[in-house]
Amino acid sequence: MVKPSKPTGRAAKTSWTPSPARPPKAAARPDGRGADCAPWPAAAFVTAAHRLVQLPPDEGTEVAVAGRSNAGKSSALNAITGKAALARVSKTPGRTQQLVVFELEPGRRLVDLPGYGYAAVPTTLREHWGTELRRYFETRAALRGLVIAMDIRHPLRDGDRAMIALAAARGLPIHVLLTKADKLGRGAAGTQLAAVRKGLTDLVGGLATVQLFSSPKRTGLDEARRRIVDWLADDSGADVGGGLRD
Ligand SMILES: Nc1nc2c(ncn2[C@@H]2O[C@H](COP(=O)(O)OP(=O)(O)OP(=O)(O)O)[C@@H](O)[C@H]2O)c(=O)[nH]1
Ligand SMILES: [Mg+2]
Image (cartoon, rainbow, N blue to C red; front, side, top):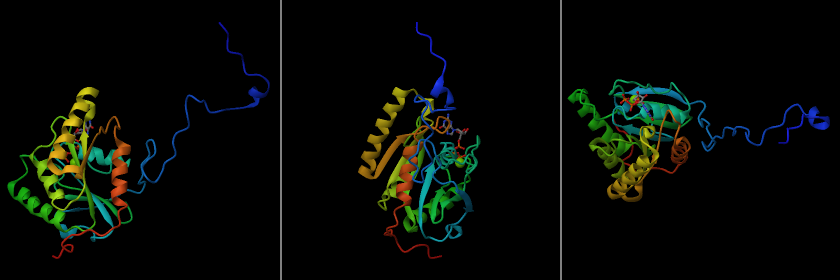
């Protein structure tokens, strides 16, 4: 067996050379396409709105994020923005019952919609959000797309379908994150991904896309970020009923 020789001569003078086995970390890129970079270093909470009139002015662009209670929406928001404490993660379902607005950069927002499907939310509050969300989708000119977090083990429930219908009624693109993908094996996750893709195609044709996602394993971050970056960059005007009037 040949022993590795000690560094001598010229090689010994070199204090450090990068090992080809461990390439340097990818630099952060503003478009979210880096290996594991946060594309919005200044992402910050703006407001929690109980009514649409409390939202920031309907200018710039925004992406709505929806999901059943406990689907992993807040965890996904934190992972995608690279800010561990941006949205509140809870073990108690049904905590987020407001429109929570985060600004990623000036004029580019994420809007965390109230979680649905949680029985303990009072009926009056549920009705309130039924009405407000419908108006939000019908009138919000800045809205460019809808991200829906669905637990990979329980996808496409009634609430998810209702959200999809709201977005599709306006021709808004939809991107589904199959969250908690780490809870299934690779094969089962792939099977579920294919089934949901088929279900979405049956519902809204080419309007919806879907991917695997896991917050703790950081699976699917780049794909999710890319989708959001692309939507937020769309500065074309939206064809809606003229913004909020009250
Ligand atoms: N294993 C696993 N657990 C997750 C994942 N995402 C979220 N969780 C856990 O699921 C629970 C709910 O996560 P949240 O991110 O608070 O879910 P949410 O959809 O925002 O819930 P509400 O706002 O209460 O409706 C927490 O205990 C998280 O740690 C994931 O990708 N994998
Ligand atoms: Mg939440």
